[in-house]
Length: 203
Image (cartoon, rainbow, N blue to C red; front, side, top):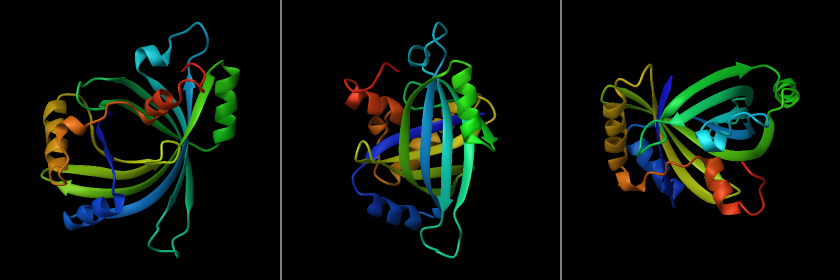
Protein backbone atom coordinates (compact mmCIF):
# COMPACT_ATOMS: atom_id res chain seq x y z
CA UNK A 1 0.00 0.00 0.00
CA UNK A 2 1.00 3.62 -0.56
CA UNK A 3 0.36 5.87 2.42
CA UNK A 4 -0.21 9.50 1.37
CA UNK A 5 0.49 11.46 4.54
CA UNK A 6 0.87 15.10 5.53
CA UNK A 7 2.13 16.27 8.92
CA UNK A 8 1.95 19.78 10.40
CA UNK A 9 2.67 21.30 13.80
CA UNK A 10 -0.22 22.80 15.76
CA UNK A 11 -0.43 24.85 18.95
CA UNK A 12 -4.02 24.28 20.12
CA UNK A 13 -5.21 20.64 19.86
CA UNK A 14 -8.54 21.35 21.59
CA UNK A 15 -9.51 23.95 18.98
CA UNK A 16 -8.51 21.58 16.18
CA UNK A 17 -10.62 18.82 17.72
CA UNK A 18 -13.66 21.13 17.74
CA UNK A 19 -13.00 22.12 14.13
CA UNK A 20 -12.72 18.47 13.15
CA UNK A 21 -16.16 17.74 14.60
CA UNK A 22 -17.64 20.91 13.01
CA UNK A 23 -16.45 19.70 9.59
CA UNK A 24 -17.94 16.23 9.90
CA UNK A 25 -15.04 14.42 11.52
CA UNK A 26 -16.00 11.31 13.48
CA UNK A 27 -13.94 10.51 16.56
CA UNK A 28 -12.93 6.86 16.31
CA UNK A 29 -10.63 6.23 19.25
CA UNK A 30 -7.61 7.39 21.20
CA UNK A 31 -4.26 5.63 21.04
CA UNK A 32 -1.04 5.41 22.97
CA UNK A 33 1.71 4.21 20.69
CA UNK A 34 5.13 2.96 21.71
CA UNK A 35 7.28 2.57 18.60
CA UNK A 36 10.65 0.82 18.66
CA UNK A 37 12.75 1.67 15.59
CA UNK A 38 15.45 -0.57 14.13
CA UNK A 39 18.29 -0.16 11.67
CA UNK A 40 19.70 -2.91 9.48
CA UNK A 41 22.52 -5.18 10.72
CA UNK A 42 26.05 -3.74 10.55
CA UNK A 43 27.51 -3.83 7.06
CA UNK A 44 24.14 -3.74 5.31
CA UNK A 45 22.26 -0.67 4.12
CA UNK A 46 21.71 2.19 6.55
CA UNK A 47 18.06 3.22 6.90
CA UNK A 48 19.10 6.80 7.64
CA UNK A 49 20.83 6.97 4.27
CA UNK A 50 18.10 5.14 2.35
CA UNK A 51 15.19 6.98 4.05
CA UNK A 52 13.54 3.73 5.15
CA UNK A 53 12.24 2.62 8.53
CA UNK A 54 11.48 -0.59 10.41
CA UNK A 55 9.31 -0.33 13.48
CA UNK A 56 7.75 -2.47 16.19
CA UNK A 57 4.60 -0.88 17.61
CA UNK A 58 2.63 -1.46 20.80
CA UNK A 59 -0.78 0.16 20.28
CA UNK A 60 -3.09 0.76 23.24
CA UNK A 61 -6.56 1.71 21.96
CA UNK A 62 -9.32 3.27 24.07
CA UNK A 63 -12.28 5.64 23.97
CA UNK A 64 -11.59 8.70 26.11
CA UNK A 65 -15.27 9.67 26.08
CA UNK A 66 -16.63 6.29 27.20
CA UNK A 67 -15.13 4.52 30.22
CA UNK A 68 -17.32 1.47 29.61
CA UNK A 69 -15.30 0.61 26.49
CA UNK A 70 -12.33 -1.49 27.49
CA UNK A 71 -8.78 -0.92 26.32
CA UNK A 72 -7.33 -3.06 23.54
CA UNK A 73 -3.66 -3.76 22.94
CA UNK A 74 -2.34 -4.69 19.49
CA UNK A 75 1.18 -5.18 18.13
CA UNK A 76 2.50 -4.43 14.65
CA UNK A 77 5.70 -4.81 12.65
CA UNK A 78 5.90 -2.10 9.99
CA UNK A 79 8.25 -1.34 7.13
CA UNK A 80 8.22 2.13 5.58
CA UNK A 81 9.92 2.78 2.25
CA UNK A 82 11.66 5.95 1.15
CA UNK A 83 9.52 9.05 0.62
CA UNK A 84 8.33 9.35 -2.97
CA UNK A 85 6.92 12.86 -2.93
CA UNK A 86 8.73 16.19 -2.39
CA UNK A 87 6.05 17.94 -0.33
CA UNK A 88 4.60 15.15 1.84
CA UNK A 89 5.59 12.01 3.79
CA UNK A 90 4.10 9.69 1.16
CA UNK A 91 5.78 6.28 1.05
CA UNK A 92 5.17 2.57 0.68
CA UNK A 93 4.04 0.94 3.91
CA UNK A 94 3.85 -2.75 4.79
CA UNK A 95 2.06 -3.34 8.10
CA UNK A 96 1.88 -6.79 9.72
CA UNK A 97 -0.11 -7.50 12.86
CA UNK A 98 1.82 -9.74 15.24
CA UNK A 99 0.91 -11.63 18.42
CA UNK A 100 4.12 -11.52 20.45
CA UNK A 101 6.10 -8.28 20.38
CA UNK A 102 8.90 -9.42 22.71
CA UNK A 103 9.66 -12.57 20.71
CA UNK A 104 9.64 -10.51 17.51
CA UNK A 105 11.95 -7.96 19.15
CA UNK A 106 14.32 -10.74 20.23
CA UNK A 107 14.21 -12.27 16.74
CA UNK A 108 15.26 -8.97 15.17
CA UNK A 109 18.10 -8.64 17.69
CA UNK A 110 19.34 -12.20 17.03
CA UNK A 111 19.35 -11.43 13.29
CA UNK A 112 21.56 -8.41 13.94
CA UNK A 113 19.04 -5.59 13.59
CA UNK A 114 20.09 -2.58 15.66
CA UNK A 115 17.55 -1.13 18.09
CA UNK A 116 17.77 2.64 17.70
CA UNK A 117 15.18 4.48 19.74
CA UNK A 118 11.66 4.27 21.16
CA UNK A 119 9.15 7.00 20.30
CA UNK A 120 6.00 7.45 22.40
CA UNK A 121 2.90 9.12 20.94
CA UNK A 122 -0.48 10.10 22.39
CA UNK A 123 -3.07 10.28 19.62
CA UNK A 124 -6.72 10.94 18.76
CA UNK A 125 -8.03 9.44 15.54
CA UNK A 126 -10.80 11.06 13.49
CA UNK A 127 -12.31 9.84 10.23
CA UNK A 128 -13.65 12.04 7.43
CA UNK A 129 -15.49 11.37 4.21
CA UNK A 130 -14.24 14.16 1.97
CA UNK A 131 -15.24 14.14 -1.69
CA UNK A 132 -14.56 10.55 -2.77
CA UNK A 133 -11.88 9.99 -0.14
CA UNK A 134 -11.81 8.34 3.26
CA UNK A 135 -9.35 10.46 5.24
CA UNK A 136 -7.90 9.64 8.64
CA UNK A 137 -6.74 12.58 10.75
CA UNK A 138 -4.69 12.20 13.91
CA UNK A 139 -4.08 14.80 16.59
CA UNK A 140 -0.73 13.79 18.05
CA UNK A 141 1.20 14.76 21.14
CA UNK A 142 4.87 13.74 21.27
CA UNK A 143 6.01 13.97 24.92
CA UNK A 144 9.74 14.03 24.24
CA UNK A 145 9.28 16.99 21.88
CA UNK A 146 6.51 18.56 23.99
CA UNK A 147 4.74 19.44 20.73
CA UNK A 148 1.40 18.77 19.05
CA UNK A 149 0.94 17.77 15.42
CA UNK A 150 -1.76 16.79 12.94
CA UNK A 151 -1.24 13.89 10.55
CA UNK A 152 -3.77 13.38 7.75
CA UNK A 153 -3.55 10.38 5.47
CA UNK A 154 -5.25 8.17 2.93
CA UNK A 155 -4.21 4.81 1.48
CA UNK A 156 -3.72 3.96 -2.20
CA UNK A 157 -3.24 0.63 -3.91
CA UNK A 158 -0.56 2.18 -6.16
CA UNK A 159 1.07 5.54 -6.90
CA UNK A 160 -1.10 6.14 -9.99
CA UNK A 161 -3.38 8.63 -8.20
CA UNK A 162 -0.69 10.00 -5.91
CA UNK A 163 -0.71 13.58 -7.17
CA UNK A 164 -4.49 14.02 -7.05
CA UNK A 165 -4.69 12.39 -3.60
CA UNK A 166 -1.97 14.65 -2.27
CA UNK A 167 -3.79 17.72 -3.64
CA UNK A 168 -7.04 16.60 -2.00
CA UNK A 169 -5.30 16.27 1.38
CA UNK A 170 -3.84 19.79 1.10
CA UNK A 171 -7.28 21.07 0.09
CA UNK A 172 -8.77 19.27 3.09
CA UNK A 173 -6.25 20.93 5.44
CA UNK A 174 -7.22 24.33 4.04
CA UNK A 175 -10.57 23.84 5.78
CA UNK A 176 -8.68 24.28 9.05
CA UNK A 177 -6.52 27.20 7.96
CA UNK A 178 -3.46 25.02 7.35
CA UNK A 179 -1.32 25.87 4.32
CA UNK A 180 0.77 23.61 2.10
CA UNK A 181 4.04 25.25 3.13
CA UNK A 182 3.43 24.15 6.74
CA UNK A 183 3.89 20.50 5.77
CA UNK A 184 6.69 18.65 7.59
CA UNK A 185 8.33 15.77 5.72
CA UNK A 186 10.43 14.47 8.59
CA UNK A 187 9.22 11.55 10.69
CA UNK A 188 8.87 11.90 14.44
CA UNK A 189 12.06 9.90 14.86
CA UNK A 190 13.92 12.31 12.56
CA UNK A 191 12.58 15.31 14.49
CA UNK A 192 13.71 13.73 17.76
CA UNK A 193 17.15 12.91 16.36
CA UNK A 194 17.50 16.51 15.13
CA UNK A 195 16.65 17.87 18.58
CA UNK A 196 18.71 15.44 20.64
CA UNK A 197 21.40 14.38 18.16
CA UNK A 198 24.21 14.97 20.63
CA UNK A 199 22.65 12.51 23.08
CA UNK A 200 21.58 9.79 20.65
CA UNK A 201 23.72 7.19 19.00
CA UNK A 202 23.91 7.26 15.21
CA UNK A 203 20.62 6.41 13.51
